[in-house]
Amino acid sequence: MRLRTAAAAAATTLIGAGAAALAAGRYAGDAALRPTPDRPLPHDPPLTVHAAGDGRITLTRSFAAQRPGRYGITGQDVHAVVGPVLTDVPHPVDCVVRRLERITHGALAPGARVRLTPQVYAGNPRDALGLDHADVDVPGELGALPAWFVPGARATWVITVHGLGATREHPMVVLPFLHRHRFPVLDLAYRGDPGAPRTSQGAGYLGDAEWHDVDAAVRYAVRYGARRVVLYGWSTGASMALRTAADSALRHRITGLVLDSPVLDWQATVRALAAYRVPTALLPLAVRAAHGRLRPRGRAGHAGPQPPGSDHVDPGQLSVPTLILHGPDDTLAPWGPSRQLARLRTDLVTLHTVPHAPHAAMWNADPPGYEETLRRFLTPLM
Image (cartoon, rainbow, N blue to C red; front, side):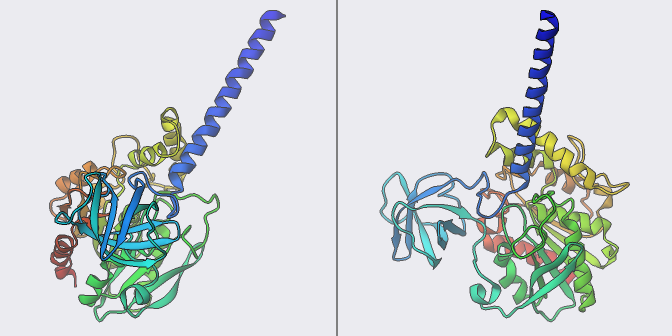
């Protein structure tokens, strides 16, 4: 009897431990699959404001504070835009001074905790950039998807798709460039975004389900006059663009892809996202839980996220000119798969390397160089 009691107790303990591990794994997987704009991504460490005014902002010195380029700054009830580091002004050795371009709203008081973000503009294209636009609804499979449409004279439309932890405000960094080159632009909000339909479980699928919303945007563009479409995605938005170009019934209308920091190794991205919110011991469970959630989303013959070591896209399915903008400092979406895709498809893929740029901030690190690369790529597609 004592042996049976001990065995039963041990079994109960193992079952309880297994259930706890399963629950922890699900929690970790959810943490990785639900990044939102109000929950900073792992590469966005907090910074402390020491002073702000006269076109300058002083921040505690760190690698993040010294990133080259142009960024948004966000904190509690504040948004501002900062430019390059100013090295020719007096400052304490433990601080960094950057150019303060403007404060969109709120105040940058000394002691405020803020973070740099690639999302430079806040609001809508008219208020933030002075660009006329229409608020439109794109019919999607879960309901109406809000989008901004910025008109242009060309028959080639550009559909922009933001990625992890961002909103449709992020693509506004390239709207002035696209508008100067007369592209009509449809800047899409997809399922789970503010104002868009919610998913049944409230979590994202790293593009494996959301691509249907991009497909709906392509149908909308064609219905309203687009003869050709260029898909332009950041992060998981780039993954959605790839999937749409491969699987859409209207893929023959898609003539080009622009992929900024594409998520091609979903397991590495899940680990990086989960590592910010869960203990290291739970990371394998997070990946397993995310795999269980993502795997069923693939259709027959297209299994969705792939086993370890494989890419999120089959290079053989790529059929249109593709520009990849990526760099070695991206800790959320490693650029190794981007380099591999460029090596395997030299006939179609151009890789533009951007150093010193965190995830989805390739434009921010070098706006002139980024836009010149974009101009050269888009010119034959106009």
